[in-house]
Image (spheres, each protein chain N blue to C red):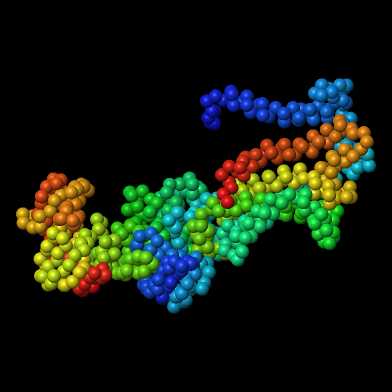
Length: 350
Length: 275
């Protein structure tokens, strides 16, 4: 199968009446890359995907596939495959005809249709149930059929709109790996829309984080996790989310209410201090805090402590589980601290 | 296995009582048609096939043959139903799925049209048919009947189209379909229950239509069964036996169609409609 092509978005905007769903988006996706559009619902990620697919026409801006400008083209002339959250299989057709649908529309000869549908279905492990109707197969199989339908015409760009969110947690993990493997093998350029940050981090080469129609950060999962550009990304990526404390930097430390943390080389002025739950710990000497909630997560324990008015989440190894209401000593790390200014933008290296 | 309500004998009794007048009416019709004479429900005189002579004699009392009227009725009903289903589904799809100027006022006007009793339009329609040269033709009456039924059909089909998911249509577009292909290959097959319901409803309604053919058709060669039957009422001496036999002949297809189509008709009254 052929390799994918780069997708470039230039100044892309979409307005529905007075609502600006997507604002001035610039983004390049390299050939063969899997990029995740991550964000809460209503952040513009699906709207962007539908503009790439050709369902929505952008209000302004351009979409390029390689060197070809496609934003004025009908979806059928764009050579994209798409998997929908609801799978959107045609209930009146069996799986074979569902997968064959794009080929039938292209008037591919019968014999070739049969070969290509069978080959794609086998690749996805549903080759033996092609005569069944969508309602007669499991959710996981429907999802594979939808993926097969998107792949059968060997598109240059594969669009995935929350393809895993209707699956059971168990199947979801294996489907994640499988989609990733297929996408790599086929070399197709893929865009995955998701609101699940774990899914985005696990599957994507790069992640574009959206909020309120605007791109917040576009980077690899590692950069996103370790150097979030602003408080939105910091709070959205990672589970449990990063602790963000509003307070004041004093040049040699940070204070918020009763909380005082000495930080050599800290900035000055009002801002936010970010620290991930897994980087906090309990020790002999530290900041006095009271344990509010203890939530065993299996291998780890999620602990919520209060320092005055400030609430903080910690992830501790199972053995270090404290008792509720106990006074503990909270230890802040010296390195994994994130500084944000009053507007929420990262201070320091990006 | 259907589950019976707890006090089903009572329900059965209530249903039987409601159905009784209709059942008695049909029985009366049957008896009148089969015997020489009946006094109420009691046959007087011998069983007689005499009432069914219209089936074998070319014409009864100067009327055209019943077979001509039957052919006209079948043509009339199927043409009306076909036109109505075709136009209503296309119009309803556009209204349900597309944005166009004056969409909302248009929808409102359709509803107003539905509220108009057809009888109040008879004179205006007469003039229109005269101008178009369609007066006294089946085609003319078919067009009139289909148009008058369209508002209901469009609203009904719109309800069915509204229930289809957008995802499915978007998927078809991405798969390479044009809007037209989406309509024929994806949307239309999925509203099959609506089409069957509307089709059955339109067939029944057109089969029973009287006032339009009565007003706009003069020549016997274009008579439908409704006109054929009505013609007996115009005589000085009404042969009720003969009329009952014709009535039974006229009603049989409806009964059969209803038995076959009641499943679909129920779609109109349950779940199917969503404005």
